[in-house]
Length: 295
Ligand code: PTR
Ligand code: PTR
Image (cartoon, rainbow, N blue to C red; front, side, top):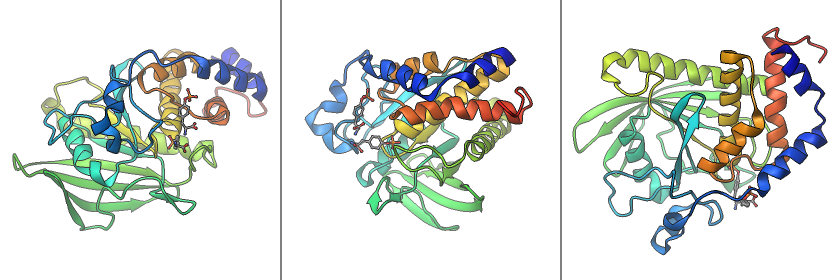
């Protein structure tokens, strides 16, 4: 791995940008019929950020349309490790929570603030205050506790299905230092965030024990930003590459992003977000002692 990492460390920003531009030219390998249907228009936050029919997450028991702007994405050696989705709109809060329930989601990762630069990027789709409670369609959500960290908040939510009277716990992680179309202020703090998210997912899967009969790594994690492509794609690509590096000592950013874009179209929005993946991997490798610090 050291040789590979040294090689990555020698790559020029311009070469990496070029690689991204090549990827960007590859058209999405599917159709967008459902996302484009007239009656689903109001369910997309951005008219130009649609999801592929082939990988979209259907709402299983919809109130009206089964369409939500959300896509299954594979992780490292894990099918459907993530659901990449847009920041919920007020009119889709009910669908969002129903999807979380139906897909048995334990962890929600939010990499945006609700408002940035005076513009709404994502709805306030969960009760913000400790002890607060809100009802979204058939789901009631209670905020049990908020832990504030320097760069992120971790909120424990209790989800009540008012139709079946069952309840479950869901962890909500919000990263606070990442503007859209930008890159995080620090790779180290984003990786610390990623590690905290993964630790919580493992802990929750383990606590469920035999009740969780699906994949040993657990149900999909919901990952969203505003459009659910730029920051969401960067976060997932980084997770996949670091998992592969840890497992087999190699990684391939280009292949990872290419594959991801076939599942969540348009994942990673800027050359700098793509370059950030490389840099974050290198910073992580230095911290792990896999690379000399002067690289
Ligand atoms: N049409 C929107 C725009 O032009 O800004 C689409 C968009 C918004 C695309 C945000 C990506 C965005 O970033 P992210 O996926 O990180 O929220
Ligand atoms: N508002 C987004 C943008 O201008 O980047 C909308 C958009 C999304 C445009 C995806 C193009 C997109 O495709 P690609 O990332 O493949 O160029």
